Image (cartoon, rainbow, N blue to C red):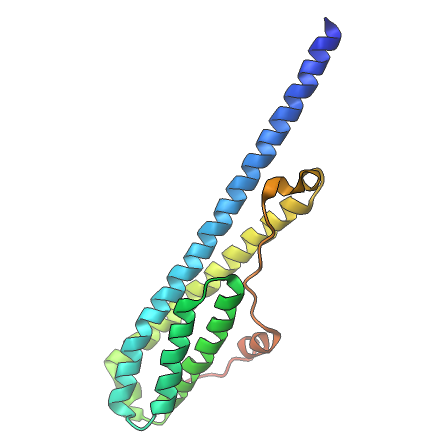
Length: 186
C-alpha cells in the first residue's frame, strides 16, 4: 500500500508541476500579446496624428511636397506592417520622414508659432514616450517568455509548443541617434 501512495504522490507532484508550468507560460505569452497590442495602439495613435500635422505643414510650406509625400508613404508602410520585424523597419522609415517634416518646420517661424502645430508636436512627443514605454514592457515580456521556454525542464517538453518571440529592437545607428538626439527648439 505504501508504494502505491508514494507513486501516487510522485504522479501528483508531476501533474501539479506540469500544470503550473504550462499555466505560467500561458500567462507570460498573454502578457507579451498585451504588450504588443499596446505598441500597435500607440503606433496607430501616432499615425493618426500625422495627417493633421501634414495638413498644418502644407498650409505653411506649400513647396515642401517631397517631405510631405515621404511622411504619407511611411505612414502607409507603418499601417501595413504585420510582424515585429516589419513594424520595426516601418517605424524607422516613419521616424526618418517625420524628422524631415520637423526640419521643414524650422524654416517657417510662423508654423512653429502655430497653436495647432504646437499641440500636434506635444501630442507626438507624448505618444513617442508611450511607444518607448510599450516597447520596454513588450521586450521585458519577450525576455521572460523566451527564458521560460529555454530553461530546464520546460525545454524538455519543447516549451509546451510556445514559440520564441522577437524583440522589438532599434538598430544600432538608430540607438546612436537616440542617445545623441539633437536639441530642437521651437
